[in-house]
Image (cartoon, rainbow, N blue to C red; front, side, top):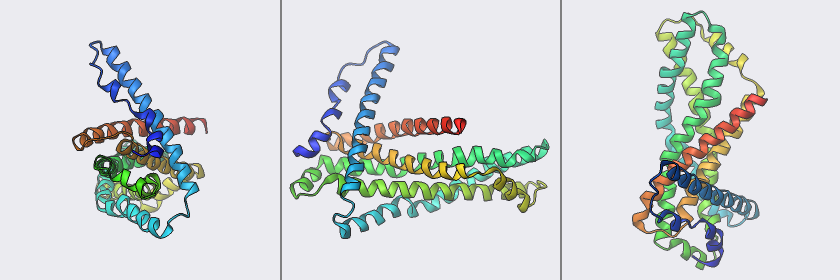
Length: 286
C-alpha cells in the first residue's frame, strides 16, 4: 500500500506469529490465541480512532459522493434485512416471550412479567441477537468486499487518485451499520413483544392487551431507553470496525479472503460479548 495506509496497519501484521508451528500444550495454544487476539484488538482500537478522526475531519468532504454511499449502506444494513428480522421477531416472540408469559401465568407471577421481559428481551436478547445476525449477514460481506478490493489492488488505486480509502470505503459502512443496528434492534424487540402476546393469547392466558402493555410500560425506565440506544450504536460501530479492519489490515491474496472472514466473525462475536458484559456491569451499578 501507499505510505499513509501502510503506516496505519504496520503494527497489525501478525502473519509471522501465525506461521510459527502450533505448540502441543493446551495452555500454550490458549496463550498463543489470547496473545493474537490482543494484538488484533490493539489494531482494531487504533483503526477505530483513525476512523473516528476521518469521520469528524472530513464530514463535509465530497458530500455529493458520500451521501448516496451512506444511504446505500443504511439500506443494506437495515431496510434489506427487514423480512429476515420479521421472521426472527416472530420466532423470538413465540419461543421465548410467549412461553415465558404462559409460565408466569401458571404460577401466578404475572406481576413479574414486565421486569422479566425488559431484562430478557429489551436489555439482552434483542440487541445481542441483532448484533449476531448483522455480523453474520453484513459484517461478513464487508470483510469479503474489502478483502477482495485489497487483494486486487483497488485500495492502492484509490490512494493513487488522492482518495482517502478510510473515508470512501469505511465511513459509509460504519454509519450504515450503526443506523441499521439501532433500527433493527428496536424493530426486533417490538415485533417479539407483540408476537409474544399473540402466542400467549393462542394459549388462552388470562391477560388482556391493556394489562400486558401496562406491565411492560411500568417496568421500562428512562435508563433502559438510553442504554438501548448506546448499546446498539456501540454494537454497530464495533462490528463495522472488526469487519473493516480485517478486510484492510493486511495484504491479502484472493484465497485468503474466506479465512480472514471467518476470523473476523469469531472476533466480532467475542467483542460483542465483551461489550454486552460491560453494559451488564453498568446496569448492575446503576
